[in-house]
Image (cartoon, rainbow, N blue to C red; front, side, top):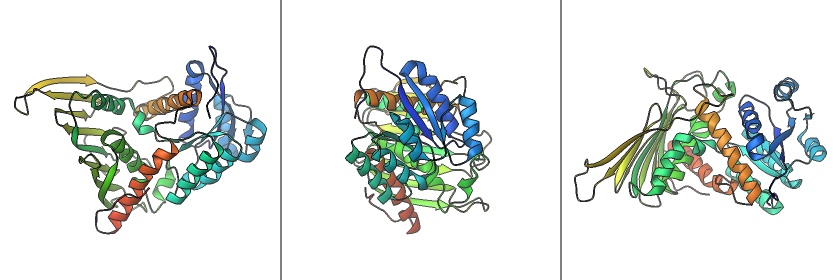
Length: 361
């Protein structure tokens, strides 16, 4: 399904389901995209009356609903933005598909692989686009890393490390994160594993180790995953919310990549160093460039969240472009099945003493 375009395209009408903590970033980004991408959020839905009223007032959206089915019947939007928690996703995605409405859905996409496959199948059968709000790929610094690799200036990647280590109190704004049996791999690691796929290619085998350092939570707050990619390259993904440091880096992802013709590093403070090796010279000889790839600070954003908030704007702009052109989104539901398979494989490996596991899509 694609949305017809013209020299002056009509605004796309969207509805947002779920008005919790992170949904306000979605709404700010949709508001900023109103002029550049001709979009308008015309309705909101949440079962919590107070949250619904707060969001409706803050963003001047008069049409509000406690029931998603009623919203879809009454409003008939071009797309729905689902910003609820994972257990509710399948029912909401299938409901939207039954109404012929395109869907962008927050991550984690689904609590089980079977649910994820069912949602992908429902949207495919209905002929409606489905994108997962897997926004880390769309962070400005990580897009800069991808552009370096795509340019070929450092050759073919052979090894990488992607690291997210922090002691930031994520539980204050999202207390439910402390309550689940699964935590860091499902909530944060899924982002870093998706970036590893995006930068290094699909994964054929992995092994993982997890720890629970914080005694006040139920799930794991430290995870290390070793990945073997189809290209033969190796990468390491390490994540922690129990890493006290002199300088808190939240929410920065640090990246190192070594390649056949050079290397790159995305360091703290969004500093990107690219080293190109000169042919026929020693490994350390060559040209080195250092760039500032800091994300912009939008008027509605705040530090240190601005990196993630900028990625929300970027992924939503991509979604709108795909709707208008009929292209499949980069983080489509079908694509996200591969990322979910990595999360499931990592949990299976960690439960079986770091055994090597082949991801099953």
